[in-house]
Image 1 (cartoon, rainbow, N blue to C red):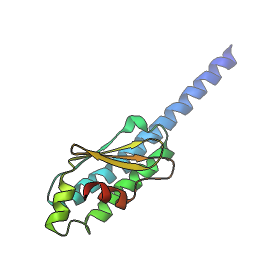
Image 2 (image 1 turned 60 degrees about the vertical axis):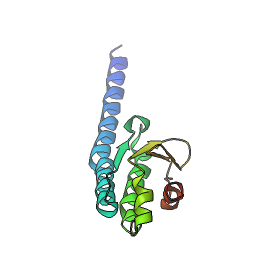
Image 3 (image 1 turned 135 degrees about the vertical axis):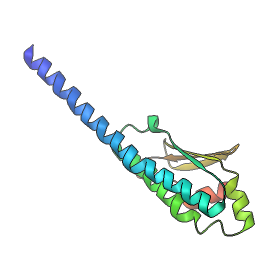
Image 4 (image 1 turned 30 degrees about the vertical axis):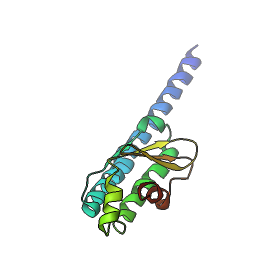
Length: 135
């Protein structure tokens, strides 16, 4: 009985450590990348964008890497995109960008909200975003 209790306690403590690792990665890596994307969007296009990470959809750290990469891609790509009035108008129709884990990398836009789904090592390309917004 004592061995079973020790094994259960060890399993619980390992899970707690993994949970902390994921929370730390989310708060120290993914969220700052999202804030950077928001700042670059505002500076480049002149309009606000709220990047919301659906942290409930991410259960392991490995799943969070493509979310971080996608936010970094947005931050890097937007500076070269909002260079004229038409592009700014197209980009500024998106007010919120939700990033979540799902099956397959995709981007959809509806009623002011863009949804980027990431899966495995894949995240939506910048072309996927601009195709939806700049129609």
